[in-house]
Length: 140
Image 1: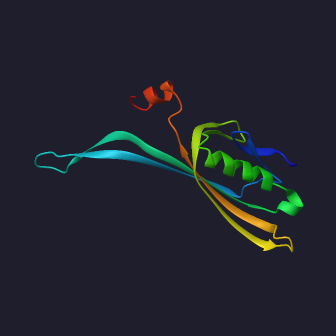
Image 2: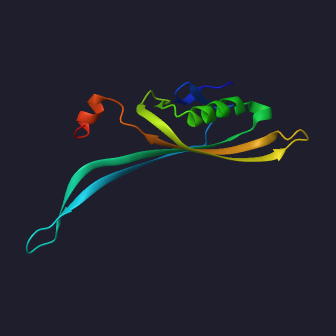
Image 3: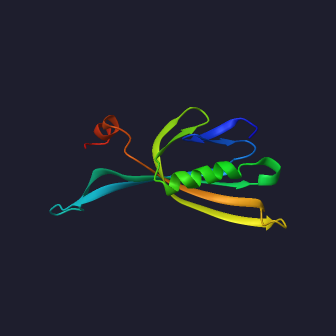
């Protein structure tokens, strides 16, 4: 667990070495309702955001750099339905997120069955964080 923290998901720290990540993607889905009009193209009315999904992928090399214990902690949080705060390196708070999926691809196993390489993908969905966020986003 060495190296600077680059991202945090609740108590789980992504570091330059150990439990690190290779990339992060964000997808925002918004909703527009079509309003019929006479004699012209239908208009669109924005009805608000539907969901925001963050995908984090990385590769662990547990024997050399560790990180397997932290990934197991993320798995337990997902199994128990624990929402976690996502915060970036620069201190940008991205809100509470629910872990939707955790995919792993373990390879290069040793004679005891422990993987030498573990690629993973986390899919997180942002949750409504507070009353203030609900008001800011158009209602409760």
